Image (cartoon, rainbow, N blue to C red):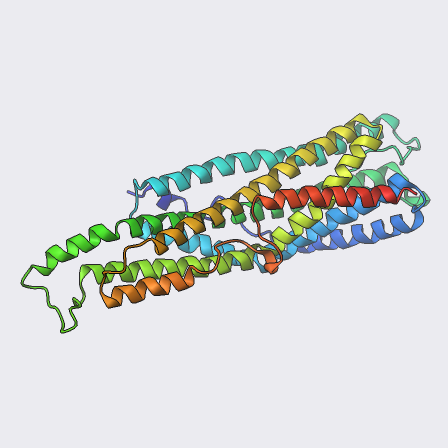
Length: 395
């Protein structure tokens, strides 16, 4: 009978890549919105709020582009890493292991929270203004609408000839679908980022336990050496003995962790860089809109989005911090292992691991900065800097 872990393959709950035609339409809509926003900034530069709205929405389309690029060119590295991790540990039949159970609990808890977070973003950022716009359009019928006061999902510049109800509803519906596709992209990316990081942390925790059990393995080996069937060479090294096999397995596991960290940095660089830099700007504009705008629906929308975005940045930074902390614990365990009075071949194994462990186990998107809890401080600093820059544009 299949275990719970074997029944659900790691990526079954992450969803699949979008169909090619949907991705193409998504990319086309993104480019069209960017063109419209550039025109909007050029024609309405003298109006401070419209200028800032155009900048904010252009920033949103850049965020969408980061998601598209990561989804199509980088996330496959993380998917393969997650798949290999689950299949390898399932093959070892580690059911009942406390570390594996803790991993599965964190996975289930994350999936439950992530689905609620992204649903809240969709409801507040898309559904709320969409239905408010429909009600206003239906209420006014064929009458002319004040397009400057209509709600929007993505702020759009309407030329005078195109200010009609059918065009407004068509654009709102298209933006609603586009917004949903953008969230699907980032929902998948966020889950892959979390799960691949969790897999790395789990691997390191298991290796720490394996190093703790090294002494027990050595004691068992000494008992085996007393057996007449154990053959020992002239240098005193047992051939194909238990300790040799155990250390070989540890070396292999440590190599998998080191290569997995490179894979994690390769697969998560664009999404991390895009998220932290783009949303530092977004956070600044959310605060500005809550202060400056008179419409209550807009204030609610940007307040909710600001809180959610900040919570996601804290969550991602916490995962990076957990990875760095667990990497430090692994390094200390390797350094503190009792290897001085061990055979020369075992000392060489430990020396190889110490050499590998000299590099910090941390996420560094494109080598620019370390992704840990200090990243939250950088987001706050970036938000403050952008806020001062944007308010200076009022003059």
